[in-house]
Image (cartoon, rainbow, N blue to C red; front, top):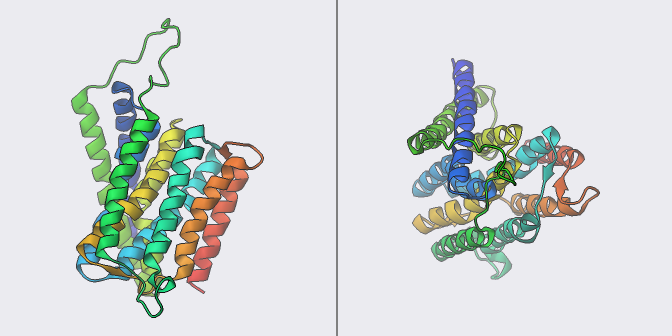
Length: 321
């Protein structure tokens, strides 16, 4: 039965990703908003809803390590597995804005998490945790960051608009249909992700895999399935900006919005989450930035995608050793 639910959950995820991508692309076209911004905001926050639910509920229940581990594991999954897989399918071009602004924001956010969480670095004997004031600070930074990014990127004409006006433009999608596709796509991603996660967790427990490994791998990976599906589908549809924006936006939202909100509700202690886990999060952001300056400049190439996947496999092997 769990295997059947696993398949149904995966089908809902794929269908939801398809609807969300098409609806979001139509929204970008109608309001002349760059697809990267749609990916960074609507798609990123929408696909981060499973992480938000899991982390907030875990914080309320006092399960701090699950709340933090979910975000840490998701961010690692997003860069090393999702972008690695996407780059293998098709090299991901990076714009000057990605290199100067968006990816460095991701690096700074990962570094901020490391600094805020490691209280013992600054005070001997202190408990490593993310306090309520830290959470409020994260939320304020997130709002300021999104406001700045949207203003800095500005509005541009849709990519498929003819330069000389000689070719007819695509007929705009009806507003109600866009709303149905975006909301329906998100619902499919969320419910499909929950179904997939629950059945995968049940199978893992039946196979004797420990709870701690389940939390940082299956829980994080399961809540990141919407990002995986929407990014791959966006890439296949030629919307590489949306795929990249989805991952970068999700990682920033995971740390600043989700952990910020969770810590504001209830301070989060590190528990079983180690310095190594936080350093791997930072490593993922730094390697994504460095990818812009290797061999084929301003792109995440296939060999870099393969390297990302190898690093992710090595990290999982380290966890289950």
